[in-house]
Length: 187
Image 1: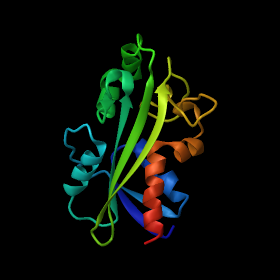
Image 2 (image 1 turned 180 degrees about the vertical axis):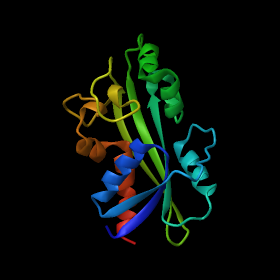
Image 3 (image 1 turned 90 degrees about the vertical axis):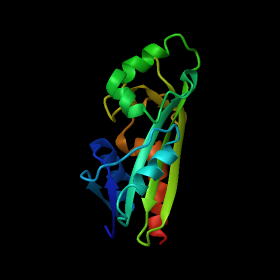
Image 4 (image 1 turned 90 degrees about the horizontal axis):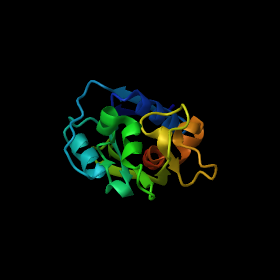
């Protein structure tokens, strides 16, 4: 590992995914769970990530990430409030809300705000389209992984049914982190 990036997160699942995704590119992820990540209330995960980074002292080689789950039939709910929604009603609540809806299309969007060694800020996004399953399946991952079926998955498996390597290659977070890795490795 020849590069080190600090990730402002207290979410051990996100940290594990980031470490695996960037680690295969030779980039070590160092967690910073002590710095408070301040978030604004917005429906735009990019604005939330940028605001969070801007509120952190000007640490270099540092990034924050924000993710949203946007469900068409629910007018984009829970959006960037996915973590709060999961803690409040879990995926069972989402399934109840969708019980009478035929359109179960949804997408995950991840936004990463990164401050490079020169103090310049960069934004990276990753999006994965899919749909919400009719019931949970799988025992991997976290959050809404047991009910989200990505479109690029011809076996119609939820994120929670995929092995970690495949999920990390196709997921919203994986796509955004790959873009970050390209910048790091080309600088």
